[in-house]
Image (tube, rainbow, N blue to C red; front, side, top):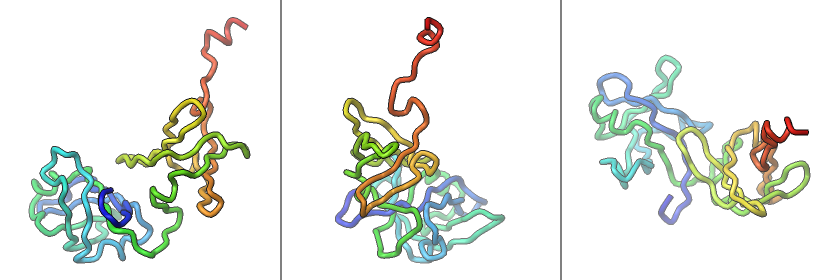
Amino acid sequence: MAGEKNQLRVGRLLKAHGLKGALKLELYTDNPERRFVPGAEFTLQVPESSEWHGKTVTIRDYRVMNGSSVVFLHGVEDRTAAESLVKAILWMDEDDEVEVDAWYAHQLVGLDVVRDDTVIGRVLRVDHLPAQDLLIVKTADAEVMVPFVEAIVPSVDIPGHRIVVTPPAGLFEELPSADDSASE
């Protein structure tokens, strides 16, 4: 994200909830009650074509309703306004709170990517997508998109300057085709 401070991705607006401007929220934080307090301000990640591009939103209220996190935002007073924010990702300025298994993109860039105790590449960048983050890993001959999920990236060691990966077959190498194995 642009700006002088580092940004932390803390949530994604999923869908309008009710008629009064509420939005269901997918959490990317361990501490929503602290993050989504009235008055908290968030930078929006939306397409450039969105009326919300380049704007911030401020929390009016945060609640858990029927097991779902729901936010009310200043200036979003009805369902139509809420629907215009669906899929927006919420970012906030980095603070000193440490969250479990949470890292800033700038902490991951440049780390060695290790598979079976062998360095196979280096993190080039982190792409933040709605479903999950992707680590873009530069190997000797390619750039590989690695889903940043625990099943594939079980260990991040910032002080050790490395990320351990356990990728599925074919993520970092070509798999033999069915024709190759049939001709053997």
